Image (cartoon, rainbow, N blue to C red; front, side):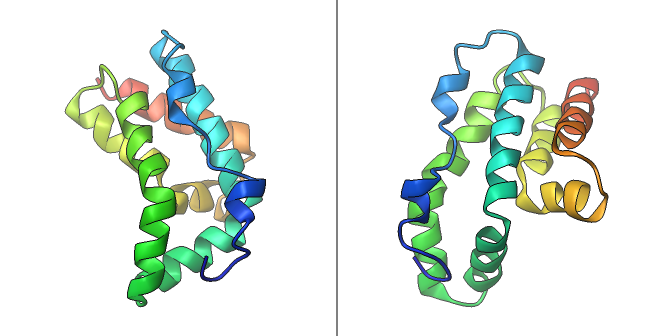
Length: 127
């Protein structure tokens, strides 16, 4: 992997979205998923920031990150977005962004759980 240890995903893999399908209550599924994703962002913030930065300018970094992270990132809105309307899906997309996490937690000073709850409430209230 560019900009990091090639074993980083082995040591701390991205959360598996399929495990959340068993959670039938929409808010709880979203809360569980965002908690896992935001926790992963917190543990890997420097790596994610560097890869996202470099992927915008370096084709190989973009290709590698898409191969490694793409399937996970594609599964998140699929699993967490079940039974959401268009407005809620747009807010879910915002909630899943690393930059949203960084803004809420890193720049806004929210604790991880408070950031998750803010985004759960935003998605849920957009009915």
